Length: 439
Image (cartoon, rainbow, N blue to C red; front, side):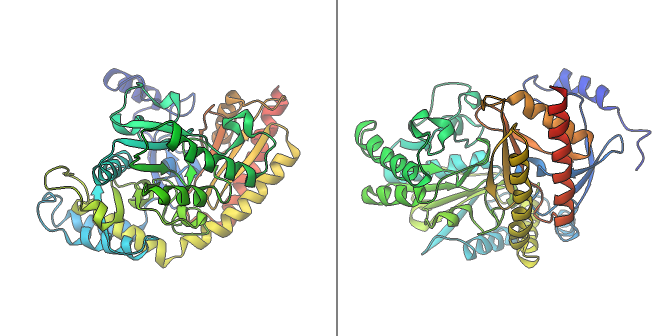
């Protein structure tokens, strides 16, 4: 790869600072530009090769430079790139049909396409509040649903909310993970599930006006640090919601399309049938696209001109996304996520057994996380940052998140091999050891 004529990362960073907002942050102390990808590997502008175990923030689900997807995009771009959604788009219709074919929702369904995950959640909230004639919504503490004004208003993390104002009347239910409340410490998963589900009932009765439009939750909390809900929690919540006709929105922006390994949709791991599902990220494998899929009577409850998306399901994004979903299904990437993810999780569990700084290991499939903690067990965000740097030095890219920024997030393309997962696990071991040795 020719690196002689490329702009140096340091120079590009200075140019970025001059024309882009300062708060648009970058990973790593020393800037890097990724310029090429192949499968689950990427290369930076200086010629360094990495295992990509973050996948563009849980987005590059099928891998980089997949011929079938590239060809679909190139073929469409050579025909027509945009005509607006005011005209028929065959690939858009086919993509909707494919999603409904795989849907966990029963009965007649419709799909509405948008340009991102934030827009998908905005649309779902619009459908739900309009259908139910209510502005009240329940979300979970520790949740993240997007960076738009409306989705910030239902995000349960102060660091991701620029303002306390919201377009909706939002109430936050207790998260059943013990890191969110000392009251849950020592409780069994079953007890936490039941107690926090009943908290939803109590919240409806005592903290709202009683007529709720929807409850929204991620099957695994993404930005929250890949936090799983204990078995039985969401199914019990769904029973409570059904008693009062409250809609369930499953935010699958990060968990969809086989990433969790055991099911195509994250919500299926909880035996829950949602009313609406939102998706993005892995849907386009890097193309800008999002969608809401749900019961037809809810999606169709809007009258004309109340909502439109200029770029939603456009020719190129729809064609590429359709090829992407077909690639996932044809190559059974869900099964690979289950098998390789299971192996990688075992390796992470062994890491936690031999190193005190590695706290909880969680997640499923190829959506895994480890908490890095101080000697007293408290969250250690500095250790997470150092771990990322140590992994980069050794050729692996990971992400981080969590309420206290101490969770290392691992979400590679679902094409990751067992051999590459083992190589990454060895590097994780080296990274942890190097940090411990320097303390």
